Image (cartoon, rainbow, N blue to C red; front, side):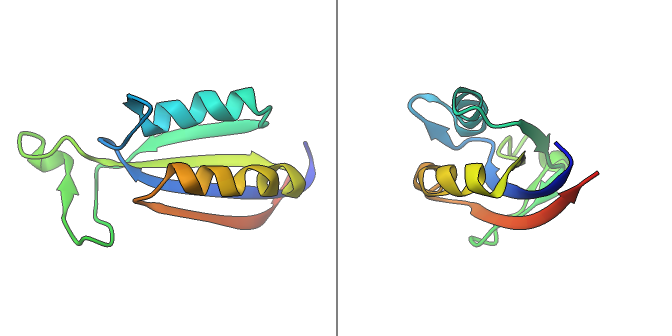
Length: 103
């Protein structure tokens, strides 16, 4: 895919679950089933969200709920078609899109 595309970013906690699976894993498999072109999962080493609770790899013995970021890339139409469902799966976290140019 070269040209205009859309990036969907999803920020969740490592401990978030959906249908008894880690949410990020569920999303990856669900996105694959939807025919999405690509998704990458990143595990953060430190961060906090709206609750202002710091999660850090340095405090691993205190917290294994590190930040997880999913970057999902496809056409605008495809991302728009899944956005509502993804947002429903992520009750706690951040979901946003950006227009991008793939080269």
